[in-house]
Image (cartoon, rainbow, N blue to C red; front, top):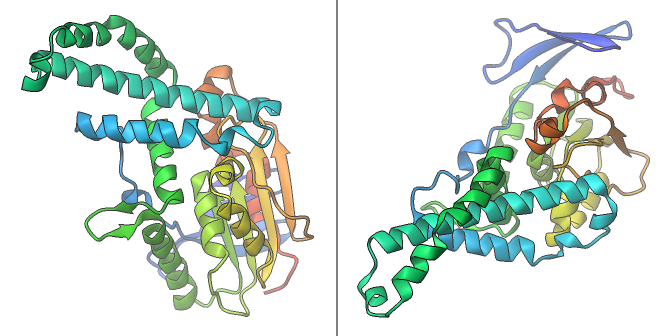
Length: 325
């Protein structure tokens, strides 16, 4: 059960509840509504670079990530004038570089233990590699590993590149963006076509907000189905610096027929969220809200995970509709 300052939500699932849904009863402002909640699941499509066992793959893939993100337009657009955004981007970059140094250290150590024939033939190379894989390299990488959620950040950085470039993953030869959009589209359409719903609220958190916007910009829904979009802790603004087509998707999404409202909520002290540059339309509104948390909470991205405990975020999701069903 979730209680807010303006209402109350409790589970109300029974034998009539769709198999894939969780049914809630919302009591708010003297009104009681029944809501079915569906999760559009896509995490199983995301490969984990941090968990990859191949050192060679990590070295090659890590180098491509450093080139893609460090030498990019994400540092433009007033980044250094926004302290929380700057902290988040710099922290992520530091985590990626620290992780990569650790991977390179392991790779060099493996080369020293079993040097290939071509390295043995070059005088002085093996001692140099041995020195490069020493404790100094490990010390800096280990410090960042202890302070930051490095594996999670590395996987997000890697996943973002794969999605923004529609990189082919798996044996089917299909780009990740295409796979993910198809999965979420099908889950949404299955829900609205099987049940007689009078309205739809789509909620996207973190990179899920990027997927929601990208999908909703072109998603065909029943013409008589009112729609609301709520985005929480979105990193879209920073990714749009790298992939400008995302800004075009934002504009298309904001102007689509049937969209009653789009509320974008960002915790002001969330280092890993930038918010979305919404167009100046009556249906669109942005809100930056404060949140409690220590420096370690911000550093460990715990603040980024707390949107569904945040009063403003919950109110944006469960707020009464302006149209009647």
